Image (cartoon, rainbow, N blue to C red; front, side, top):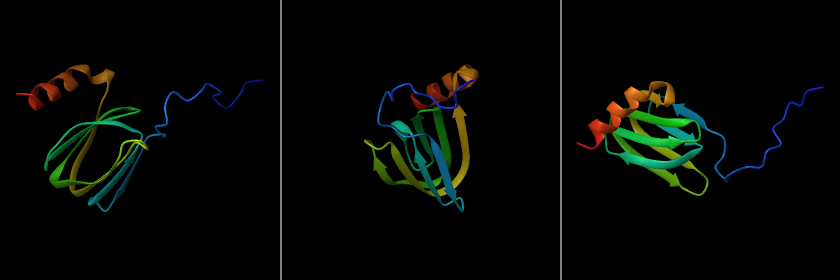
Length: 100
């Protein structure tokens, strides 16, 4: 009989990763390990499920709770893209654009 739960101990207090968008104006993101970079047009977050790039207009960090791994962003959201190991070249290109 197989088990349907994972009994491995939690490695950190960072919760599961969820993205909740309200009307393209507000994003609540959980499972955030680190905010890599941000400005009024682009955020790059390291989440428990990979890097997440958020593009938009007039973006602002509304809330940041590092201990709980929660970030809230407001502004006009255009794009949400995960940059993970399956898209290594895309991620490298994205980072090289950030740090020119």
